[in-house]
Structure formats: C-alpha cells, structure tokens
Image (cartoon, rainbow, N blue to C red; front, side, top):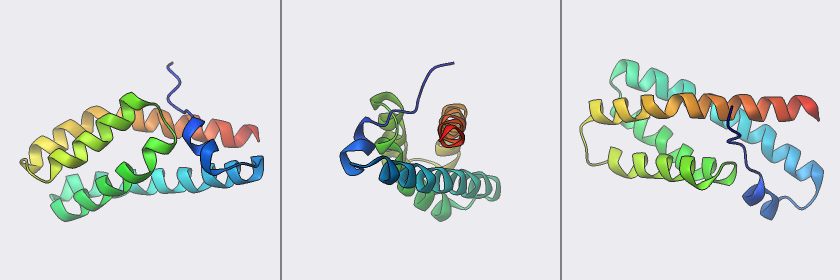
Length: 113
C-alpha cells in the first residue's frame, strides 16, 4: 500500500501538534463529505454539484498529499469545466481508489492520536 498522506504542506500552517490534529479532523470530514457529494452528483448527472465538489477537493487535497494525486485532482477540476460530463465522471472514477485510500490513511492517523 502506498502512502498518500503527506503532511509536509499542512505543517506549514499548523505549527503545533494540536493544530495539525484539528486540520486533519477537518480534512477527514471534508474529504468524506465531498466524496459523497461527488458520488451522488455523478450518479444523478448533476454537473454543477460535481464541479463545486471538485473545486473543493482541488482546494484542500493538495495540503495533505503529494504532488501526483494533487496534480490529478487539480487537472480534473480544470478539465471538468470544458469537457463532457461523462468524461469527467470516468476520469474521476479512476481517482476514487486513491482518494478513498487517502481518507483511510487520514482516519488511521487520527485513530493513532
């Protein structure tokens, strides 16, 4: 299993362990919520909800993961605004396993604290 959780950028904002823990809690909640929203949006063909949720992911995922996954999320959001919805849906589905793994790693980290 590859480690997707990378706290390097988050530590730039959280100088104390308690601050980092709170950022992780917020990130876990936000990531879980946006994944649910995206699942529903793609299932129901709701382009606007999908774009809003991808925009949210683009904003916070890069703080907690490395460049590869970050770039993929940012790229998908940028493309989603100019490509067919079904293509965005397909491309998002390829990211889901890594996003779910990231969520799992965040939860494991939080449970260890």
